Amino acid sequence: MAIDFMGPPSASLDSGQWKIGYTYHYSKNDLLVKDIKLNGTDTGIDEEDIDGMKVERHYFTFNYGIEPRRWEVYGFLGIANMKENESWSLFGEDVRFDAKNDFAFGIGTKITTNSSEDVDWGILVQASWLKAEDKLWSGTFDYDGDTYSGKWDEEVDAWEIQVAVGPTFKNDGWKVYGGPFFHMIGGDTESKLTGSVNEVPGEAKISGDLQQDNWFGGYIGVQIDLWKNVDIGVEYAYTGSCEGIGGNVSWKF
Image 1 (cartoon, rainbow, N blue to C red):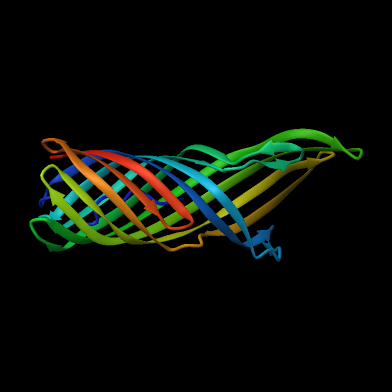
Image 2 (image 1 turned 180 degrees about the vertical axis):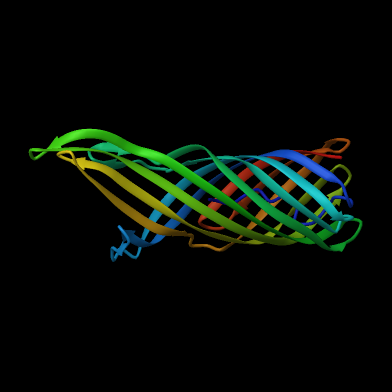
């Protein structure tokens, strides 16, 4: 649920060529929760801010060339860790959403629109999905003569779309790339409290839709050839409400 690693916006593989690799990406994101409901009923709260949500991703990546250095498709799958920047009080305890090792994946494509000896121009489109869960609290306490027992679970289902355009400048052994990109986040979040009061069971659900303030940003990256068919790259992206930095190592065959 943040900016994903993109790489050069233009294709670089020959027809039938594969590239596999590993990507690490870290981002910090300001998000909005809108259309907030309690047990399916509108609460009247227009929106709530989630500031500084930290997302860490580990991906296995695989690319495949369709048209020689003109069109390639790719996918990535792995795990993600998601953590709130600040804790908050729940039933007298400090809690923080901290989901670890949850499944994440994505798909994408790159098309080279113009090519020359020194620079390639292209467009990249990719989409990714993430589901994260955490148990924020569980316990039993007495209040005003009543006994309360229960647990509080939080779940996030999110997707994002990124569209980038720009140049890839080529030189012997390295590339510099980047440009503007469109970034859209969607999904939903649900908090569920289940438990009992004096052993009488009950349940409450708070749900909302995920969005972000800024839909456009820019990114820049560098890719270096370590040795034949093996390269390494780093990348930084920023939209005003999200920013991320990551690295990738890959092998072509």
